[in-house]
Image (tube, rainbow, N blue to C red; front, side):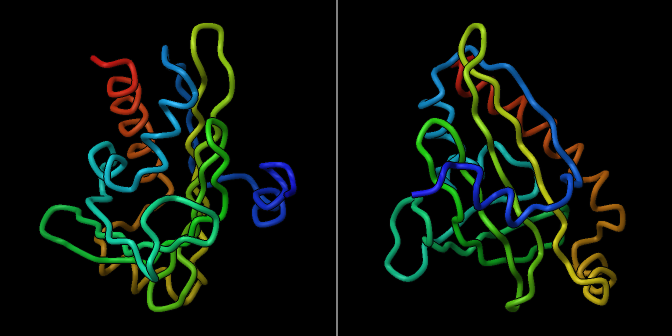
Length: 166
C-alpha cells in the first residue's frame, strides 16, 4: 500500500481552500477514532449533522461510502462521501459529492506532538464552476472558503475538548 499521503498528493495538486491545526493532549489513535467515525464527527462539526453507511459498509475503510446529512439554520441537504484515506492514527480523508458531482475533499492529518498530537483539518472545494452558484443558493453559503475556515476552527476546538476529555 502506498504511504498515507500518496493519494492525497495526487488528488490535491493545490493548496487547501481552508485549513487549521490544533495541538491535542491525547493519543493519535484516540483522535483518529473521533475523526474517522462519521457519527462522532457529526457531534463536532458545524454543518455536518449525521450519516448512514452505504453499500454494506459499517466502518471507515478506504472505499467505504456514507450519506452525510448537513444543516445550516433551516437549510438541510445531503451528500455522498467516499473514504479515500484511512490510516489509523495518522490520516483520514474522504471525497464528497452531490448528485454525482464532486463537491469537496476533507482531510484530517494527525502527527506526533510534544504532548500528544497535532491535528490538521483541511478542505478543498472541488465544485465545478457551473455548480458553485446553485449549490451556494441551496446551502446559503456564498463565501464557502471563509465559512469552511470558521467551521474548521470550531470543529478543531470541539475535537480537542472531546479528545482531552474536557
